[in-house]
Image 1 (cartoon, helix red, strand yellow):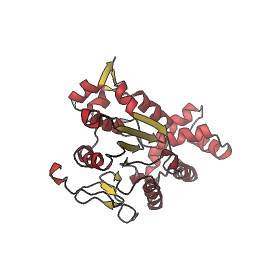
Image 2 (cartoon, helix red, strand yellow):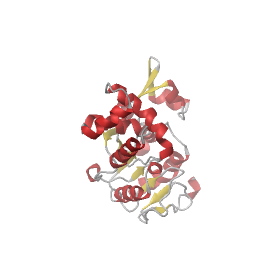
Image 3 (cartoon, helix red, strand yellow):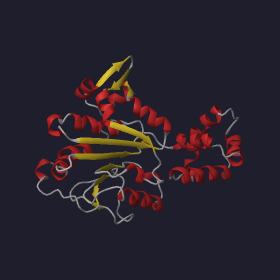
Image 4 (cartoon, one colour):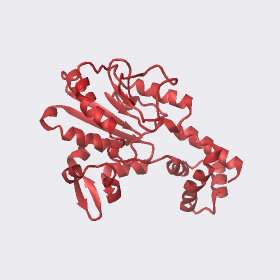
Length: 280
């Protein structure tokens, strides 16, 4: 790939998705954009680059962006965040939200939906404890293809074997040929929307819990700061934010503070673990 083409594609991707590509990732750009070139009946990346420069086709730009955004996900990925949610965060929310009996959870960059549905399974298994509560889980992703996949709730045998306990598979899924579909009850608990984290988030409303895990690692520092401060505006003071194990708010924003003793868990400052330590 020509240097000027790499620079053009990497600038485009940064503007549209926040993704930062270094020169050593040229191979990744080539491997993921060749299928886009073929889809558009182009001979190769040279023609793709020329077309992008001369014709601002939004459908083509969308295909390029979606091809490059990572869509890696699995059920109960890394497990610890879900244990924290069940044993620490949810009990606290049931206490502090008792008057309005409503909880909103956001799975940002939700990919094909496994994180959002993992949360739905945990909440569904609470049963009578949540009777009369309004629980809303919203998953958003920049990829229209991933949003549609998530809405369908259909997963391959390989996908359901990654992190999903067999008892949850039997309880919450129905086999369809060589694939599995999550139950209608759980699909009704989660709504999925196409959304770009770099744009205005206010139409999404306020969230008590935000999962934004393994997303910031693809951004440069100014973009990380922008995204975190935008997310902060969508949360109450005692809301909690989950980041991935390799991510932090330290040195990026002072809006969020680490929750004491809980790796990967952050708050605007109003979330307290007092009285719940024994559950962890």
